[in-house]
Image (cartoon, rainbow, N blue to C red):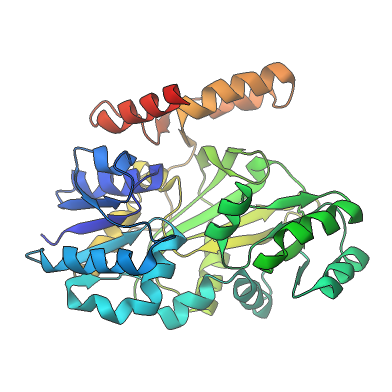
Length: 381
């Protein structure tokens, strides 16, 4: 069988892909610049070192070229972060036939990585988006203060990796004009969007995860919602829940149609408690952190992508089991207990996040080395 090559295999999303394909008998190569990356430790994968696509994008592509030349069969790439997509995209023709990219070409993918283009596509089809102003200077900042409602957030349009390196968070928050001006001056070089905050807790954040073939046909679709993230309100998932929502799936696929995107993606929305409408948060044109929950619910999105890439497509029927949870126990449980003790999170909501059946994004007795690596890393911290 042709090998699958999982890029930036440091997190639970990469581990979910590695384990899904490995259990299906697919040979997997896990790539990362960090020798301690979780995916490199899995028994289902052969580890390979590559340069960091953020700091050395050209060398990263050259490492993939060398890897392709050493393979007996063309490999199928799986991206887990935007960083790999942004490094490969401008040089996609350089990869040649030895590496299959099961996602849209750069002419389509490049704009999808730009949140302003995502918002424009959503508006064209009537998909709600938070009130937002794209900034190019101080005049746009003052227009935001005059026309938008506080609280507001500043988030990068495209350079998410650079923004995270600068601020160690995904967004900057502002409660009033004074704070917004200060935050904008910190982030101005990233040309951030300024958006109103949609009210609601972490559990109002819903996801459509899917794989679509080159004709835009959904081969596998999953929906669910976050239960808790870190940092709260604007962070990454620590606990999530599967719930099939056919209306969300239909609206999300309509947006992906408008963007012209195929491949694995996540459409994330926030359900506004004021009117029940789903507002677009972002489209991630690659796997997302808790993709393994889809697999555990019978919708194997990594396998759907792999089979499509090798010319043996299979379709998973719409709908899946719900009321199954996912978490990162080593991070979620201790922090959840602290938050309940401080009154920052309800005891009932915390207990519900642990209600069986629940799966962990890292802990797996059948594949223990990633778990041991995570425990050692947390202990060092």
